Length: 131
Image 1 (cartoon, rainbow, N blue to C red):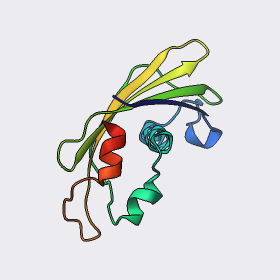
Image 2: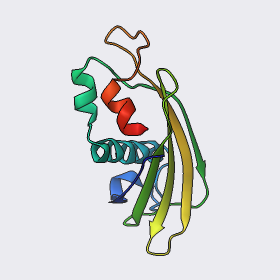
Image 3: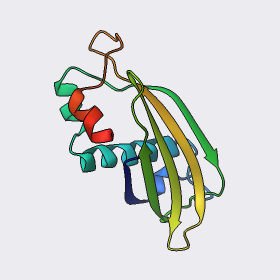
Image 4: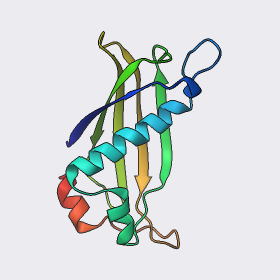
């Protein structure tokens, strides 16, 4: 299962008055991890979309274990499982650096579609990279 790790720092605008990260930002951070993994595999979203294939999120889940706070350095670990037809499953873990505290886990399910929204097989190149 291909895996990638990247880091980001919680920005002030991502927090509430108590400097705790707003829950919806975790989904944005999942996207940061997903984009980083795809780039590491050799394809960006732009490359995939040039083939007239899009990967909308059709399902998402996040389990919040501990809060992320303003200025925390986070490590996002992203894994992608083998494609099943037009579907891809990405799994995520978010840890705080340097104490390695696990803050959240989650996943997103994506379906490859064409520019009309019709399900399509993943580009062969992407399928090969994931396997």
